[in-house]
Length: 191
Image (cartoon, rainbow, N blue to C red; front, side):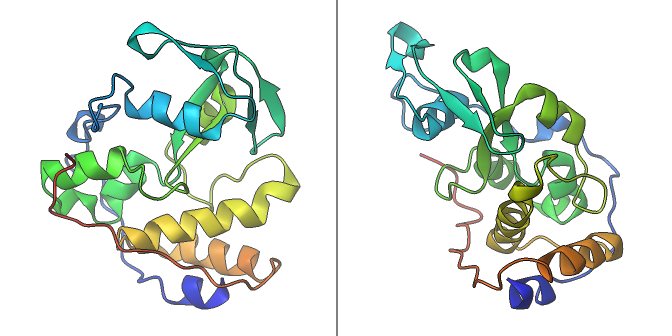
């Protein structure tokens, strides 16, 4: 993990021109009736839900690793973009095409990119990076940092100085396991 953090390129962040709408999200890329949000909920359920008409989910159970809370109502969960959309914009996505931003916002090819978490925790996190926010559950720290770094590497995003300092400090307290990623196929719109 430490080598991966060390390899993250540092650049100043710039929010100029950011609008959440620039990242079309919750699409039904595979046209199976379930949008990205529901695909993540189905994939992360600890008790599989029943999938009804128009991908209505019922009867499932989910654990939010940010706070170790278990939920049975999918409305109690948000799907967190591990690296928030605004942070991605600040870190290089501002130069991407609309298709690249759509692919990023709906990335189901790496399970670290999108995670089902307690809605209040996601709202508290907002668009903050690890220098500003960490999950409240201490045992989630190393997993969270590893996933953050993996997404930054996968999408070739930069970090600012404060972010890199925080990542380095936290990674030094975690097991030094390698982080492997497959680079995102940028420029190729989802199916």
